[in-house]
Image 1 (cartoon, one colour):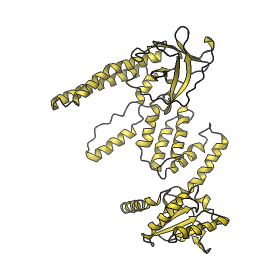
Image 2 (cartoon, helix red, strand yellow):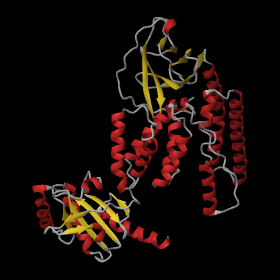
Image 3 (cartoon, one colour):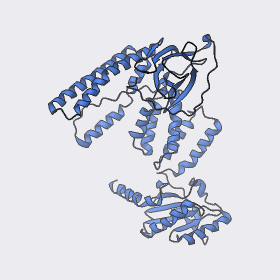
Length: 476
């Protein structure tokens, strides 16, 4: 099994309680391990789940020199491992419907001497891994020959053909095994690791690459059953799904939303797979470093959580999530910026929609914000170099009531008078709610019609952002 599985262990806890002794008849699972020449008196049972590995149980050596993991519950079906201490060597196996079996091995050759008695699932898996262990050295030897620099082109062609024959043989063996045992977990593991066979296209260069990529992505899930909860208990499902959404999909809101809808749509909403991936992607895009992907967070809340598709969530927390989403939605990229009226130092009103410019830079800042103390002077220096007819900067200080006076002290002290400075000491405009202002400085770039083009960027990014927007305009 060492040839197809990779394990990186990181346990969140070093202490795991030993399960109380139970009568054999009351056990739903009983895994007996005989590990010859093992010097320690403790073994750990672990399992895969999503993107991690976790500890399930510990067992102490019995008088008959065996270790027994047992419990009154039924183990979720999937891939498990027994971990030796203190060097963290391991053997992996499958837990299926048969949850009472015996694992035998030698500590000095864990995987090479592994056998499992009383489990049809593991009989199939061992048959498969034994075949891979037979074929892998042959393929490796051919690759080493090809890269040795000691063969000519004709010999390389011959070696490529031999390697292709090995690949075909492995695929044939896999197909035969899947046909023989279609419901086995081994068949599911084979299918989750299959790559789409991209056909030949009559094209060249970038056109060919585009066609190949389109086919690959559209057939990415052909062999994968996303209804199969067993795959969640393996190291293969999470990277497969993650790769599709985060690597094969352009990270812009519309594209990501379509990808997520496709993936989540292939899952049973009542399944454990769905229950795992929906919160994962919600959390992932809530903290994404890509500008504008808060729209994905909003999409997931509106189309899944708000529609009752996360029944595991407490009602109080659900309502908070929906409420937060409603605050975020008005200022998503592409939305029309909320109109507000704020006031200059003399009390004269400034209406956002009255500002006529190609771009309006709207920035919320605070006089006691450490980042603002650095960025606002930089913004003023940047603005000095710009065409003031095509770009307006409305800088709104967020301080209220008697603290509002510190805004104007800041403007004078930091020499930012060139900006259109404003405040709203009584919060008549409700800017903090309309623009969901939680942190400062917070920058929004608006077009002439006050549509939000981009937000939450740094002053140092403004030049590149405006240049890119202008270039895209030319080509649109």
